[in-house]
Length: 331
Image 1 (cartoon, rainbow, N blue to C red):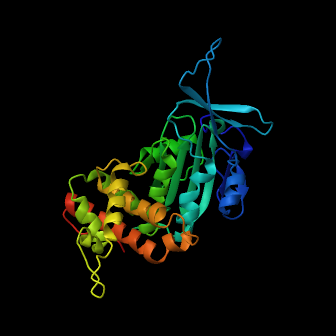
Image 2 (image 1 turned 45 degrees about the vertical axis):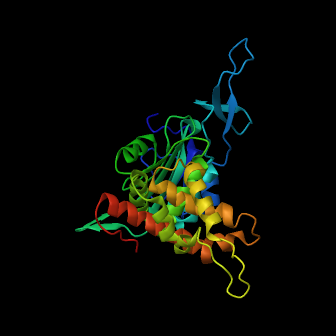
Image 3 (image 1 turned 135 degrees about the vertical axis):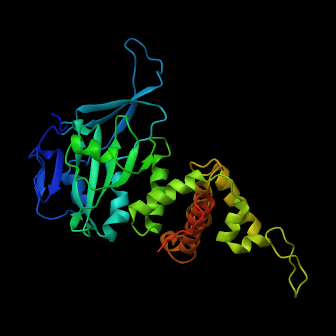
């Protein structure tokens, strides 16, 4: 089976029937929850340590597996202890949180080799016009549960309906690749943030992320100060004009938190513009408003959103002017 599909219910499709004539045909694009069910991806992946016959000592090797309809384990692959699982419902987040709101609809989704590989494909309702030709635009997310590849999010002109078309789509063009580490979910959060700030343009998001991860020689203090100008006041003594008492330094704790996030934040090691950008978003989402009852409004709107947007714009500007000598277009 070159197509890699084991049964009728291992994928769904909208519109034209795939060449292999397998899959559940839908009359209209599904919602995210419907897509998860229709693609038969509403199962959980588990990771368990494997044992050598006759031995009970830890091996350091793990197997990923899922349960079939009869609750029997289906082995997906052998992985290391540091392997991080991205569940199928989590893989839908770039679509449900960004792309669906920017003109995309689900077109196909499914599993290959009984769940070792899964894919999600969304179609942009506004195709490209090249001369007299019309080219469909798709957004593809591919994930493997056997440890063979990274999580991949990319634009493609190819409609993925099987293993063959998936391999063709993956072989062409730039992509966002997320390694299966224990921080894979944090990295997916980062990709979603950039995708939002790129107004749902997957091409722009890939370009901006790649450039941010490449720039290492920059002044992180100036970057933080460009995002939050009041940071330049840190360490300066101020006194209340009425009482003469020394005023508290409100900027130093913010700066200290940002620097700590830059070097020690989630997935950061204090090297690139990408790490500096992540330091700011982590400060907004997990430091400043961590215990706020109105967390969503604080972090997604108002001041929190303004700071994250400024962080993104300054990071994109810094990376593009540093490497390429021109100002970015973020419209």
